[in-house]
Amino acid sequence: MRQSYQDKLKKIVRDKLRPKFRDSAISLIIDASHNTKHGDLTGNTITSFSAGLYHDGVLDEVLNVMDFSSLDHPEYRKLQNSDGVVSLNRYDNGVLVTVNASNYIDTDGSFGWEYARSFLESYRPKFTKGWSVVVTTGTEYSSYIEEVRHLNVLTETYLWSDNILSGIFR
Image (tube, rainbow, N blue to C red; front, side):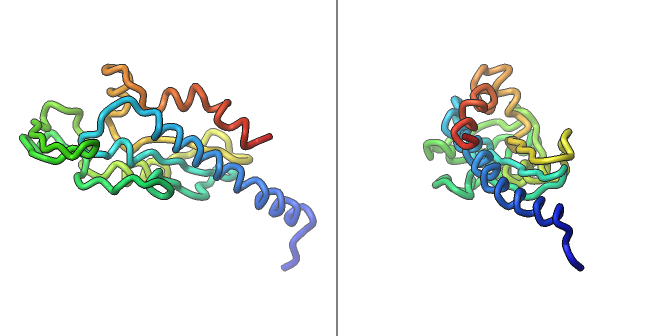
């Protein structure tokens, strides 16, 4: 079947823009991972920074910080309240600690990167024409870290996103 001139043009434009939006997503993920102000008990927040790249409302690609950084895969899944008292080596410094998981925000018990991917695969962007980039974490307690502990997870990246992206789209 022959492609129309318009279809060929759309493909050319898509192929030219996709790398720019992919670079944008990577820049936002890197910024978020470098500007976190919280510690990492299990490593599931820092390793869950992910972005969904959407074209015309359809997920085109999921990118995760571990795809292009030197971060190690977390050893432990997110703690669940039902885990009770557990001993683990902290992701951020390797120190063995004992914690009562029932004192933390309850989670689904998956790895953060799995939760982020699942969210991005189920997400439907507002805009169904053109490109969208959605950045997220895969931990239920990210908003708790920001709202209660007043530590940055994604807010600073959001606030600086215009500056982060301006160099890519010059």
